[in-house]
Every structure is written in structure tokens, then in C-alpha cells.
Image (cartoon, rainbow, N blue to C red; front, side, top):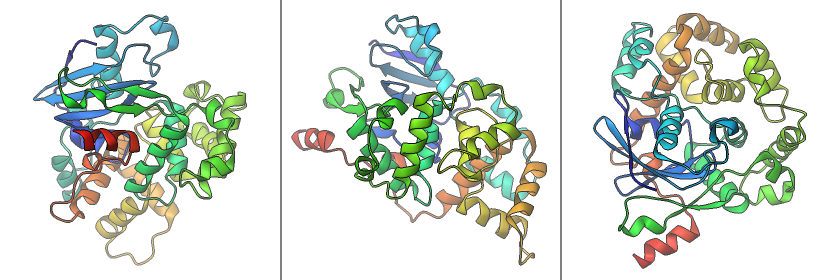
Length: 330
């Protein structure tokens, strides 16, 4: 695939991929390699331009009818990558809508260019079911294990003539593929008790009992209720899926990091703040783009806590045996 250049003003690729939204992208050379839908993608940022190479075939994060079975061309790659990274979001307007308090101002300034990725719905739902009570590094390893055991291998397409040409990534397994597995097989991917929930949800989605695409038309309230009925999905995971897969930008996931920020920065003199009080506060205080505000607060807090010199999540190599062998040969 030829190199495709995409205009990407007000965008920071590294911050976006390192912010705990997705867990499979990996630093490679001067860029990052991962998958969008069922295709391998290599993306590199040079100022306000993204340089992209994608494996040939269809990119299924778009509607299947829009691909129409044709092979990728530059316009399709550009359109798909721009859609995935939400380059159309009016970021200046979104950030201007944030509360004007010192905590939010600091997070906004630190996270300039960070965008909310539009993720494939099943991949997002399944990944966050696996994330329960796990740190980002652990979620990345679970994602890798699921992809290597059940996904499809794709050859990445970085710049021609470089040693990393033979790098292989794996697609995220479909609900149908995981539905045919067993809890015992899934536990081999370090899922623990989450294996049962992932398997049950995969079977519901695969059988058609749950239609993730049809849920697009639901209101936020009913979408959250529907997601919370799935095995392994509570309010926090439901809000993550609403934000990252359904583009409900008001959704405000509250995890350990965000709860700590809220209690310490917004309720410093209140000894006991109920979870319900925090939810109500977030819904009213952060407004229509609360999801963006949450992501900025989350990334700022988590990054500030890192030890000096610690690598970014996406810079830490995933332990793939196939690619480890290639690194050793190089």
C-alpha cells in the first residue's frame, strides 16, 4: 500500500494512543502499529500530518456497504483513519466548553491534541469487560493474548525498506470466534473470572440476542441500561463503551483514578461523598462534553503519577513471541 498523508491539525497521536482508550497499539520505529477493524495500520505523525500505510483489503470499522468488497485505495484509508481518530471533532469548541477551574485548565493544557477514538463496538465492549480491576499494562497483555490466540495475523506496512516491514499484528477476535471457544481457553489469556463474562457476552452478541449496531438509536439512558444487562458490565464499563464506541461524549466513566481526582480536587473538605453524589456532580458540572473532560483528567492524573523516565504504555513493547524473534534477528 502506498503512503497516504492525512491532514491532522490539533491532534496528538502519541497522547491519544497513550491515554487508556485502546490497548493494542504499539510504538514501532517513528510511529505506531495496530489494527483498525480487521486491517493492520502503521501511522506516523509529522507535525500536522499523519503518514499512514494499511494492509490491503476492507476496513470494517466503516459500514460494510461503503467498502463494497473493493480493495483499499488511498481515499478509503484516509477516510477510515480520520474517522477512527475523530479528526472531525471540533476540539477547540469542545475544550472551550470545559469548566474553567484550575484542575480542568491544567488537564486541558497538558492534553492538547488528545481526541476520543471511535472504536469498533464489539472490540471496545469486549476489551473493557476484560479491563475490570486491571491496570493498563495488564489489559494490554490480555488484549495481545486474545488477539494471538483467536485473532487473524496481519502484516504491518511501515515504510518500505525498513527492518520492521515484517512486523505482524493480530486483529481482535470477532464475537462469533470467541463464542465458539470455552471458558477454559479464555482463562489461558489471563482473564481469570472475566473469562466467564466475556464468553457469555460473546455468545449473546454472536447469536443476535444483542445487536450492538441497533443500539445506536437508543438514548443515553436506555443504552446504558441495555449495556449494564450484559455479563460483566457495570456502570463504569457501560460508560466507557458509550464514550469510546458509541460516541456519547457526555458519558463520564468513573474509575479509581477519576474518583480520586474528584474526591481530592473537587470535594477536598467533604469526608464522605457517595458514588451517586459523584455521578450527579459529573453529569451537571462537566456538561455535554464530559467524556472528553474525563479523559483529560484521567490522562493528566495518571501521567503525573508516573516515575520519571517511565515509558508510555504504547511505548512498552507487547510480549509477542513472533515479533520478539524478529527483534532478536534484527
